[in-house]
Image (cartoon, rainbow, N blue to C red):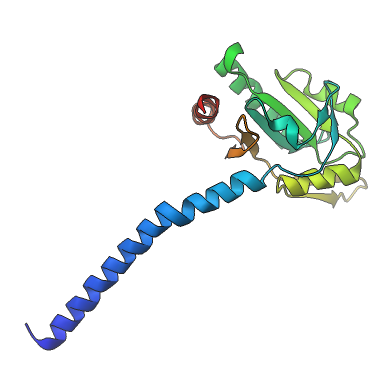
Amino acid sequence: MTMHRRQVLTIALWTLALAALAAVAWLRLIAPLMERGMAETIGPGDYRLATTSGEAFTAETLKGSPSAVFFGFTHCPEVCPTTLGDIAAFQEALGEDDRLRVYFVTVDPKRDSVEQLRDYVSWAPGVAGVSGPREEIDKAIQAFRIYARRVPLDEGGYTMDHSANILLFDRRGRFFEPIGYQEPLERAVAKIRRLNAI
């Protein structure tokens, strides 16, 4: 073997070894820190809102039992009613003993009072609507890292563009993982069962 080929082979082996070391460091050190960081930073905040069940909705509300949080609004043409339908299907598949507490937080408090939300979510089992002053809603949007933006309509009025994920939280009030918009029922229910088992 020539000296040049030996050098190329040595460099290739060292490159592979360093890549393997970097992969191990990522899997064992960096990724868990990032996950832990997300779990501890999504949800906590100093917001204080009202629920359709007559209780306050704060960061403490998420503690004690697995929960799900979804941000939407009652004038939503498609995403919100579809998601509420998905939540009703999850709850039915889970059965009475495994049902989640679910909070539907409005991104449009100007039009969505607690009373308005009570009617809107009443057909979905285990779902409480959440509303409050604009500044408190904005604190919650920031705390849950939600995207929400008012979009003017050509004919006047407005709609809201917003994140469509359902956020899952464990008994300690820590973020677990999201359920994507229209995620298949079996996969979503499996996530919730894993959450309930923690």
